[in-house]
Length: 234
Image (cartoon, rainbow, N blue to C red):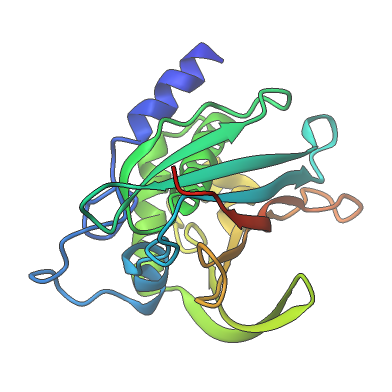
């Protein structure tokens, strides 16, 4: 676990965003235009809406993996940084299911939960396949820029219907050179559902790994917004 914690801290210093920023607040004035998928995930200002501190409660689960299935929660708290429109974001993760501690993000405009979900995923893939996390990170970034499908959907959050976008991508499906090493992970699918009507904009982040046998279920990893509350000003 110590090695994984150190590795996660290392990965969090690397870029998952198209422009190289991890605080989800990149300077975009001189940047080229990015894909709709990358813009929705990494360039939109998901957290600048609430003026006060706010708490987001996400459910997190994994099913289909037998002994390593779990159902847990992640609490994300965002505090305004004085004199700016960015937030300092901290995470409270249960250690019961082996969730790895995440360092705070000091200046966030976008929702760092996306980054946490993807970085945890690339570490899991590296461990499962014997590959390097940078390979999976690189292919995810390229796929979101060139191969992602974005389509409008309607979601239901706490009884309220909202317009949203679903981003779907298979980052490793076209890598013929590593098809043997990747095995079933080659066809792993990711679905990201976001709505600007939701606090923090994330409705659901999901990955689906096909089963090795037809009689087995797929492995589904999922993060979903459960609750939100603004906190009293200090």
